[in-house]
Image 1: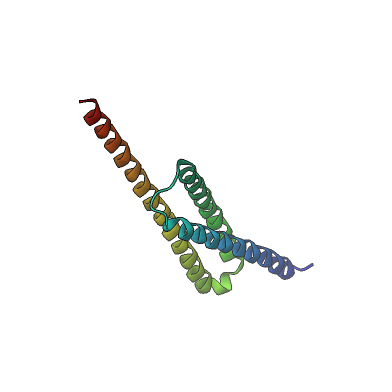
Image 2 (image 1 turned 135 degrees about the horizontal axis):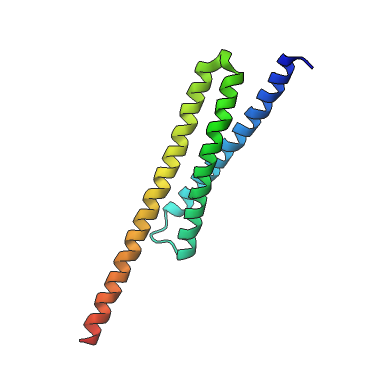
Length: 126
């Protein structure tokens, strides 16, 4: 096998892995869309969102390494690869920002509910 064929096979494998990452972003977006309509999340749902966010953040780091390998092998199409990197990184950032914002909102709601219950309990005792 020639160096060219080896590079071509490696690039094909990297493109497949990149497609998998894109699929994971899409699944995370669908998950966010599903929970976005809920006014409040249960403690389990909040934990699930937090874990999924951590996994997405980890995937973002793996993607960076993967894309760098693609850019090194496919340097003839560097401009196209850099545009692809920008697009996917923006999707990661948007998903992570949405998830973090939603977690903060849910935590604020829970804190307000606790405070209200505490005030109600104090009023009842008086």
